[in-house]
Amino acid sequence: MLAGIPILHKGDRMGSHRTEHDRENCIGCGACAAVCPKYWTMAADGKSTLIGASKRDSDGWEVLDFPDEDYASMKQSADVCPVNVIHIVKKDTGEKII
Ligand code: SF4
Image (cartoon, rainbow, N blue to C red; front, side, top):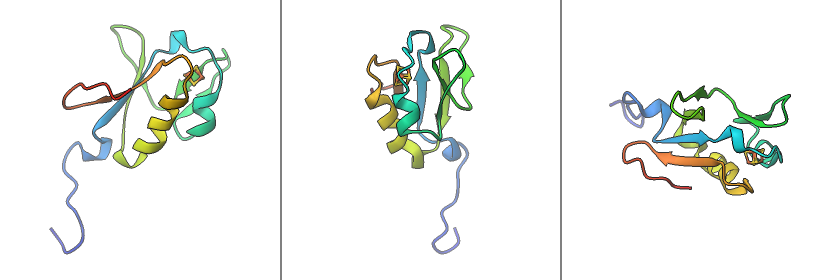
């Protein structure tokens, strides 16, 4: 490693946590998009969309791995959801943070 420059290992770029969004049960309050507009936007159907996410085949939820540097803002978006349809999962253990 060069002095002061950390080596980026495979996987680091996408961070250690994943966001999972039960979009079907979103009530469209807009809170997630208000606190974390980098990752959330309100769609034409009135529900929020997790920007850059893919749709999981098994349940249709939106899922997105995100960089660790965005953990605080992503966690905040989950914390403000009044119907608890945003979840943060630790990728290596599967632990559900929220
Ligand atoms: S905070 Fe929850 S209910 Fe509100 S728009 Fe976002 S996902 Fe939907």
